[in-house]
Amino acid sequence: MATYKKRGYKPKNKVEEVEQVEDNSTTAEVFNTLDEGASKTEEWVAANQKYILGAVAMIAVVVLGYLGFQKFIQEPKEQEAANEMFTAQQYFDNAVNGNSVVKDSLYTLALNGGEGKYGFLEIIENYGGTNAANLANYYAGFSYLNMNKYQEAIDYLDKFKGNDDILNPLALGGIGDAFSQLDQTEEALGYYEKAAKAKVNDFTTPKFLLKAAITAISINKPTVAVPYLERIKNEFPKSVEANQVDVHLGKAQAMK
Image (cartoon, rainbow, N blue to C red; front, top):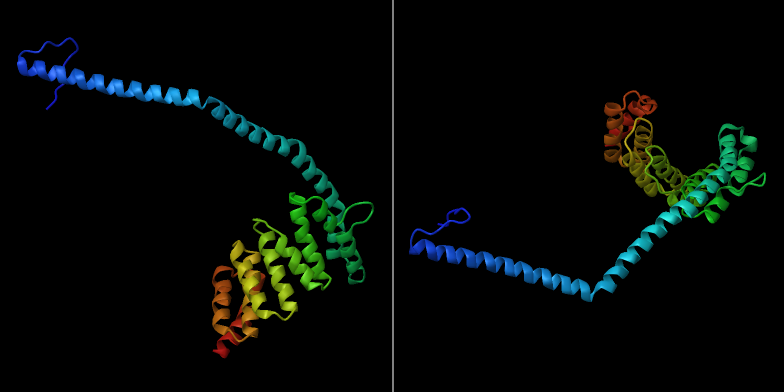
């Protein structure tokens, strides 16, 4: 077994002398190997220096280009798009809260613009890639849904991409509503189920669980409906939808 020997240690006998020579030889070999490796690395770096510098420069250009794009192009574009959205959103809000006589006109203005401002459709076309354009898809979809233009509603709501706890489930549920109005009940059920699963919360989850259950009952799928209704009853007892559960639950259980 090798033992630690202090620096300057003198061997006491022939055996220790041989061991010391072997240890010194091994240490020298290790350092020589390291030196050779370092030399080869230095040679490789020297031979490929221009390529390495070129790669570093390219990475720097990409990073600086991205930062510049975000700062001087994307951010001003986002701000401009958000400003353009303001008037269209006002038309939409007024349509939602207004009387039925003027609703379609207000939704049309929200879609196509007015007062020299873009509507949702122009924002989508002119500000693609911005958060405002993505949100405009959501508003355009619901504008069409409220105007009974169901295929258009599906098209625009499907383009909306978001992770918001409320908007994302509402968009999926809106597609379900459009399919339901088109008498494509299986598709409607699928989207109500997606909406219920998308983001669990006390507002959208019981809302779309109930719609999924009612839709399932309408196509004679009580075994699908019952778990949804029981979930509302157990997990969301204080929701508005919980008040309707017993009626639909009784209907579903009677169908079994």
